[in-house]
Image 1 (cartoon, rainbow, N blue to C red):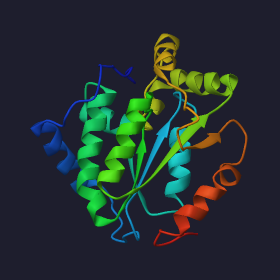
Image 2 (image 1 turned 30 degrees about the vertical axis):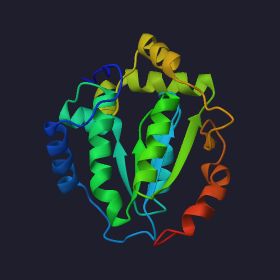
Image 3 (image 1 turned 60 degrees about the vertical axis):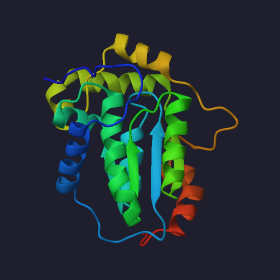
Image 4 (image 1 turned 180 degrees about the vertical axis):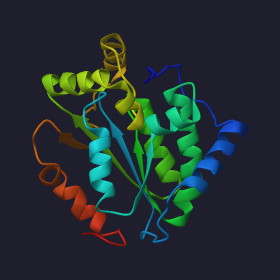
Length: 213
């Protein structure tokens, strides 16, 4: 049966256990040996069921990205919270970005401080940093939430959580919408074409990517 994600406050530095887990995950990852001309780090933010994983998979089908999913890592390794999982993901990225790989952080990144942390981390590695804000109309999000709840075993098999209405409302209250000063791409996954919305980003990525379809 699928579990509801647990939350704790604030990011922390990766513990020795977290760093060890990061190395274990790296060994288990299927990583392309093809390096980009410079490292790339893409972070996503938006409400649950707004299409973050859909966009990550879409990009991963077109570029040699390593996709790090917050939900998948938490469920697989029984981590206590989103922030704890992000710390492990940063430890993984610390190892991979120096090899000029492309990474996608498939997670919520609700606060502006979360996104600023991502930008600063990318700058430390001289990596190209792109942020994608996913959104969908409320009826689409509600239907996706209901689909998860109606088949919890399938939801777990997809490395996702069933999210109750109460928990969704709590996460929504945490989400800080992007300010005008933030640079990001916006993708509405309700019905619009991802390809059309991300065409300018595709052009940017193609300049540093080792391959593009």
